[in-house]
Length: 252
Image 1 (cartoon, one colour):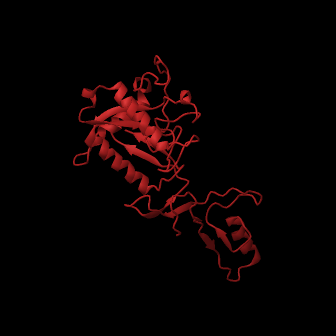
Image 2 (cartoon, helix red, strand yellow):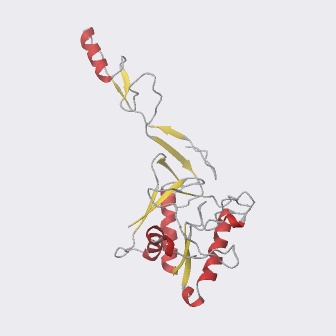
Image 3 (cartoon, rainbow, N blue to C red):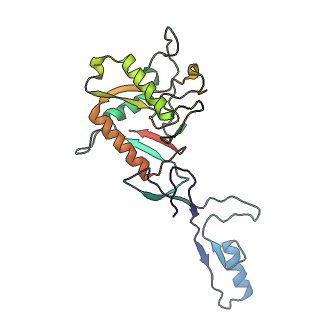
């Protein structure tokens, strides 16, 4: 492994086992039959991912992406099958003894099943505000993916992506929920703050009126929100989710 900090230039390796056939003086017709059976006229061939035709270039052998990164302290380094889809799973029912996250899971489920009943219901870039219809949330498996953004990632107009997401979340939280509704709670956002598609996403970074309204803000108990944050960070660390990496959400 090599040490790579805050970068997506990772070392890769491919798993490609081979099978060898030892020729112990077989007669030519037997030898040719065996070689024909395995598909190549050679004593050593790959056990899988062998092209059916000599002109084929497809290579689907399992590939590993490895890293050593200080992005995650719990899992400092690791290897993943990088062609496998990363799916973050949550449940709306808290298992006995587990730290509760169900209120956040319920919020995410709501964005999938009842998108037009999510907050905000009106724009903030228009005066007076205009109703938002036809919301379609990215990230729900197997639809369009979410994409992680690094803490230092900036938009085209020089604003931190996560900062813009947080600003919009706070604005909607304070504008569309009363102090009583927010009491003892924190506002949860979906898509997540650390994603390109978060609450501050714009089709054109320089134009506030190109704001995407495919996001939802909801106050949830502080305990649930913090537990869900830790739960998601563990998923990201175990699955080596770095800048621009795609992942999905599945809520049951």
